[in-house]
Length: 349
Image 1 (cartoon, one colour):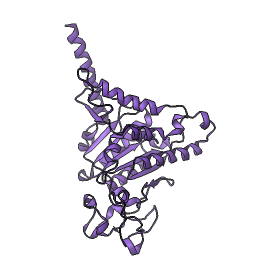
Image 2 (tube, rainbow, N blue to C red):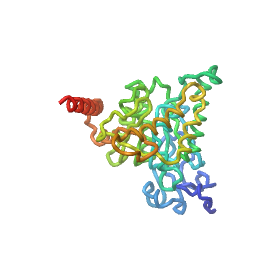
Image 3 (cartoon, one colour):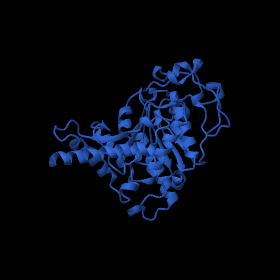
Image 4 (tube, one colour):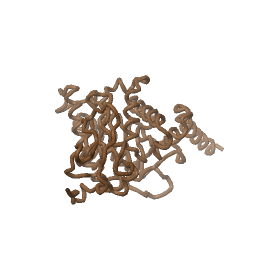
């Protein structure tokens, strides 16, 4: 048996036509649910050097065990058809969004950093089922269940275009995510983090004005705080969707240059026709915001890029579990207020 020879299938851990069965991998053959963690073995010749950090001697990895999610309709889509557990194991960047299309709007830095590379892989996670989105035009008479299926298919198309390592659908109703005491999404996210071990994570910023977005960000932080310190990502960024972050003082602002592959960026956002034709021009607004940020970021310098997105650095919240989340965000607001007041005072003196 020989590994695949085309370049795309050799990215990361792709094992081509090798099937997950006892004869090949010596591991569990359950589908999505497994009553207990199990060891799965991948032959060493199919493990690239960049991915060896995920494996134990002999090719065994506890991170390739079948997954248990709380929602019965949760599932994983892998664009290049690699076995889901191995697809997750190659992740270096991960985006967690509340809804379908949030990732392509807010986590574009991670998507671009991984696109076309064999050593960097982006995994997307959508937490809610997308049933409640506004609709008009050809989607005006679409039922909530029909809209759920449409949005899932659109997200899968984006994952194919962006060459994601995997696209996870946790498929929770929005109300379940907003319920503070519901720990099921936290447990699912913690399990995904343990399997994927991404180095960089993108989610919603805590000053977003959409309650679902803030709820997801809080559950991401809770999930990461539940992990041992050594299993947490190096960076956690809160990104823009329903509130820009240009108000952050420059010292608090994480600015990502997303000038490259503008055609890819347009395709990723444009694939969500149910939202665009359904009444929201996210395609134009998203690209316009990136261009505006690039120009307005520095008032006394020429443009250094043609596209930029901003993020709030949430990493301190997963480095210090005792750090109060609300106080952390309030400190950013206070620094912004102080900056405004100081400038006015300066001009009045």
